[in-house]
Image (cartoon, rainbow, N blue to C red; front, side, top):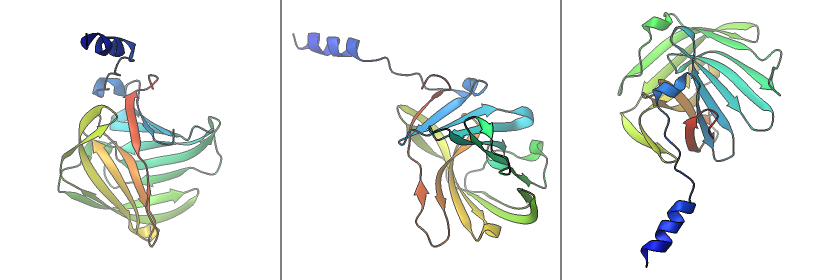
Length: 196
């Protein structure tokens, strides 16, 4: 008799969502944080990954990631339209085809050329890759390589990212300005775009 209520509760529960795989990158893989904001990553041209941030209030950003990690273009959006004067680009001294995935325990120190809304200046970045580990987002678990990115020409501004080899992209989990407390993102769900 105890099995009947258990069976009924299982039947009444929604089906567990399927965890996305690399095959879903064509249509997009979406992450949602605890505040309802989303980030969607899609396969882009020539080894790039397209990223779309949406705050759920009409504001967002679009970005293009070389190797799924390194920002080469970013601009803000409002109600789906580009906000004029917000575009920045970052030129790296390598071809996209020469950029491999992050190597656990490795690092990449690189000089860039930054075009920050028309202000062109040199940049210097350090990307430090941690050990391969595992992360669970919602009910889905994946291999993950943590990345610490330091932007020396932005007074040492730091970002922490989680790189998911399954998909070939890294998503932002923390931002930190020098001398200030970090701002973190807590992602609670991951699914093929359109299914969240």
